[in-house]
Image 1 (cartoon, rainbow, N blue to C red):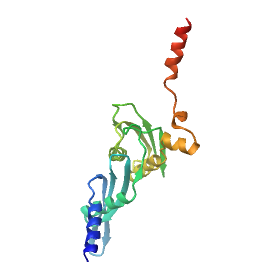
Image 2 (cartoon, helix red, strand yellow; image 1 turned 180 degrees about the horizontal axis):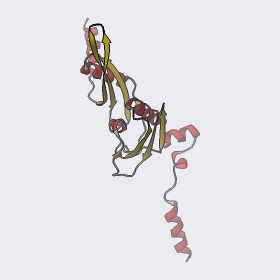
Image 3 (cartoon, one colour; image 1 turned 135 degrees about the vertical axis):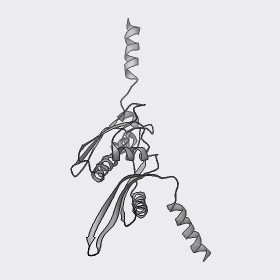
Image 4 (cartoon, rainbow, N blue to C red; image 1 turned 60 degrees about the horizontal axis):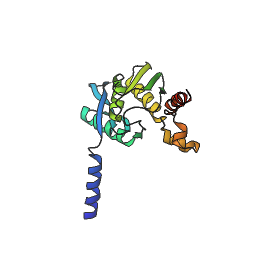
Length: 192
């Protein structure tokens, strides 16, 4: 019996994990007209992340707002994806995500740029732990489709290490060499 209590305790600890932060993106009140009047329900859209490269989103529906948010948060934690970040602050390369009529463009940015993105996309970047990014939503303003398009684009983000492994090369062979220009100028001055 003590063994079952221990398992139950571990499950509770795992659900109330403080490493994840969550952000409520949208809440929608829906009504259903029935014989006695109207019944109201709520739909919540939540983004969850650890601010270290993992993010997920979920939606929940219930008769009460807190219950809808709880359901959405649980669904978001189940659907987390890992996104490789450059220097822990920005994307490795520019990406475009699409979902339905939604199209989002996400670009890498220099240090100090900040998060230049609107609404739902900003929530994803903050929960992901990105500090510098420029993003634009083209098409739909629907937060559900904007989030799905953003997540679709982020899921295709790849790091130089992953690309090198896939091609069977070294990371240094894939990344552009930055030290070649100073060496070339040094050789020219030696010849003169």
